[in-house]
Length: 518
Image (cartoon, rainbow, N blue to C red; front, top):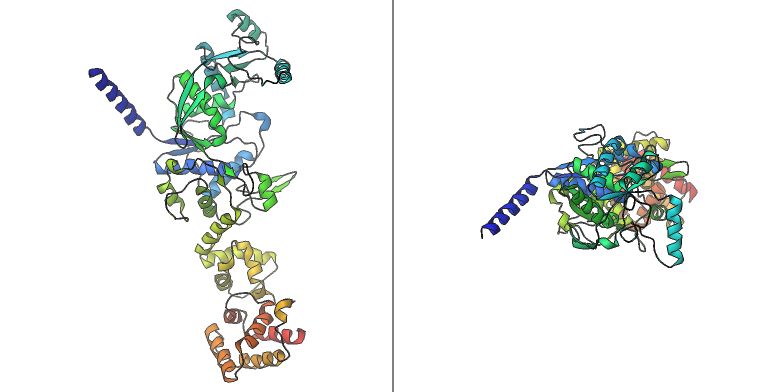
């Protein structure tokens, strides 16, 4: 009874310790190119989890693979997170509590930990050449087998497991190339827990002995990742599903070092809009939507970005948050603060989430409607300059009339060009409504307009409709040709709002041109 009580007290202490431990989560990309939208979602979920739990979201740059390093990629990642409003509170050059935050600047740390694993029997030296390993692979393939470097052959290969300590040290001293491999335990079943996926079993006999330290003196992802997560006091590792197969190795590494492992959560994939498989840049290129937060330029060309396509950062964040998660309600529009308040890893789906480009646009449309007309007019101004338009018209008022039909500010010109430039052609289908009597009616309309003093939308509408009623003129006989004359097509907002904005002189000029042309 006493023993049971002691056990319960210890368990309770462990639970309380976990509860009191500060939540620290990280996003740890490799600077090998632009940040994919899947990576952005991973960063976002980490950010939301940290905010929800009054924790810390930090960014670590994992650049141990110098062969794949791409100049400018690190700066791109920083800028992207900043633009999205999910900048880390600790990173390179910012609150470096456990710095440096760039792995290449931490490489002096890793060798001692690799050596520690050697000394404790959890790792070993492997001297196999690339040629020798290639020969083994080919031999296995010829026999219809797959070559796996693990418990069944590690003592038959060129390793310190079959060499004496002296022979091993002699070869290292002689400058022979070697790697350090993890010695995976034999005949064990690992019972691990994932916050999203629940309890998972792994058989150690099916795992390979991963390289932890390379011959170039750099650690592999696996070693550096574990060491840094421990030293930076990471409490939860929230990452993509593609890292799930690495979970047993990482758990074993924590065990080997005698460290408490963080809690793991593996996020579902973002899937192609059509077909099966993971969303790729090719899908975006094919269907005309961005898969990167910012534009990325290379010698091969330019990959489009959400920012340059005119997406609002809050719309991108809102859309991504609901790819694989929901709060259990029908709510779709969330501010970043609301997302942080409601976010729960237990509500992340196990299955992959289909990327929907139309839904993506829908979110942007919603946030565009929420913007003030003034700010949208300011955003529209550079487009007008680009088009060579200098105008005295009330652009803010024009924006207020057309924004409902827009998904992006870049749509404004196509929706509003007729305000600034008189039509040079007329829609053929609409022009069929231009009848024999239409020129005469338009001429009469000009006379009516000329005599209006208070040239405001409501007053113009009242007077024109009174004229039509008194003269028993059908609405369609006037209104359609009138709109066609001003716009060049049967589109646009309320007709009399257009008339007020372009003014009396311009309205009459366009009517006269239509009479002469059609």
